[in-house]
Image 1: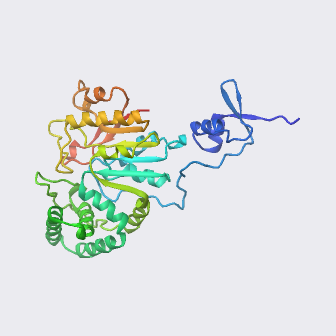
Image 2 (image 1 turned 45 degrees about the horizontal axis):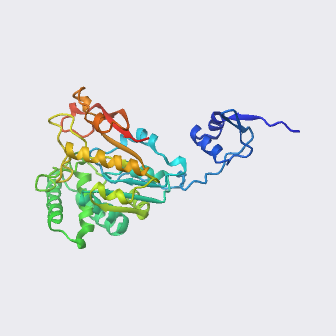
Length: 359
């Protein structure tokens, strides 16, 4: 009788270049031929083949189109992706949906769209111009790209003074559409949103108390006004995405026990002067942070996997336990981030941010 040589789950993980947790899942699902237990330990035949991935999503291969945010966005999570992706729960086989109710620039969204093929995805934001741009990229990509190329060809050859004049006219037009626009000019509004984002100072989206975009022109020599390849890839990935302009609470009907939810609300200011939250006309004060925490508790009771990001008040006041208190039932991790958007270059640097999870 032939003797079978075995390896441990850790050895299999290293051999197959997958996570130890994934190997354990495959063992529990009996998807490895002749897998067995020795006491409390799984043992795997040393010549066993790595099972094909039969989950409801797939990792993107080299021929899959990866996508990246089409806007630069204050508070964007590109630099924290490595930390946030540690929380992705998709390899358990149960989570097949994703919701991001404060989508913003969508760094986490596009990372997930590049790596996984999920059954359902829901995004929302209260910024109407932002959501309009997502929808136009999804539904009217050809017309959008044509308009962006037109702006690029008009803007790039100009000298600085002429560029400023052109920029101010486009900003004025955007604000007019923002206040008086209708469905027939949404494509132009989306094109202006992208153009202004690529040419304004620091890529900010900021409005005044009247809701008007008020950021001055930046000093870019050759801004990428129309990244056609990425825009078309984003359009393709957004085809199955539900895009909603509305409050985060509207996501409640979508979220269930099969959903991973990432909440990235406007950050709580960590100093008295760091009060820039005007991505929309609406502010997000402490009471609204508390309301969000209650909503997170409700989604937790539904069985959803939830991650929330926010600023760490302890950067400026070690006795400030605001988030430690309102999220006391959950896991709080402090991670290092870099403050990228600040008018004072000396104020940019390493700070702590919070990643809060219910698992």
